[in-house]
Structures are given as C-alpha cells and as structure tokens.
Length: 167
Image (cartoon, rainbow, N blue to C red; front, side, top):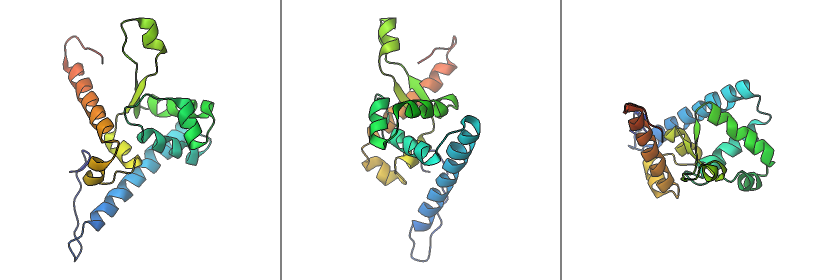
C-alpha cells in the first residue's frame, strides 16, 4: 500500500518492480489530467494549463510552509495576480486548504501569512516527485508531509467531537 492507495504489484520475468511503478505513475498522471487540468479548467477557465501545472508542482514542493505568493510567482516566472487566482481554484475544490496563523490577537490572525495543506497527500506526493515510499522518505518534503498527515488526522478527530470543533 502506497500513499493510502492499494497498489497491486505486477512482477516481470526478472522480478522487478518497474511494471508496478509504471502503472502507479500512469494512474496518477491520469488523475492529474482529469481532476486538476480538465475539471478545474472547465470550472474556472484557467488560461494556461502548463502554468497551472507548474504552480501545482511548486505548491507540492512547499509542504506545510508559509505561502508567499510573490516568491512562488518569481520562482515559476508567473505574475503574482495569476498565482493568486490559480491558488484559489484548488482551495475552492478542497484540494488545498488554507490554515490561518494562530494568534490570540484576531487582527494578527487575519493578517499573518497562512499555511496551505494538501487534502490529498498522494496527489501532492506525486506532484512533488515522490513516486514510491523510498523516495518519499528521503525527500526534503518528508517532514511537511508528516505535518500534513497529522493535521488531517486532527481535523478528522475534531469532526467527531460534539460540539464540533475547528482546527
């Protein structure tokens, strides 16, 4: 089992896992094309799919970090207003979630830079280039992935409480 999805391993004659990794990559590539590119383009009229895809890859490589849209725009050679507009698409469809900074002072809470977490850890792992559990464990994003996983578990537990609490 990799990233919460069952992966049936098909061995070739030499007992390699190349076939299973190929199937895994093809499945996720199809998922990205279907969900991120086709569906979001139909819903929000994204101007350029390559730019949107580059932004999603850039966001996937910044797991759990404070999100500086100007820095991302500079890194991927896009205009900041376009980055801002494109980041809103996956937030509206619940692929990404914005977590405000916590301060006792409500004004600071609203003004400080939020973090963004992926709700689909498998998708974000694929976009960040982690195609198997070994590459995921060795990646620099491993700590952020763990942080996102803890957040998602806490969020699920908070929904079970009565009265419901929010994280």
